[in-house]
Length: 88
Image: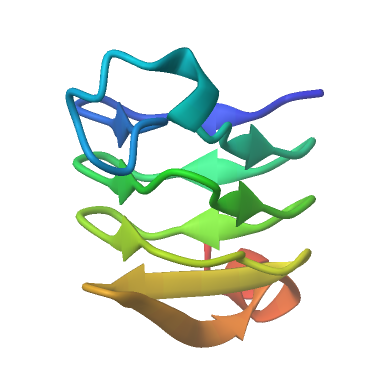
């Protein structure tokens, strides 16, 4: 695994903070080779797929599929990871 997480990243596991009740917490899953840009917020229950990219400053509210690049608030599809890598 070689995930990349930039600075000022917020990953939440409590949908209604502070619930103080661990039974209400929902994990976030980040798969291998994912990239999370600086200043992102990932909401409870989100899943960042293998090789996916979440662009800087984005807010992820739902699953980000494998090999896709999403940006914005809320984050939405921008391009395939292959296209993104070709631009770098």
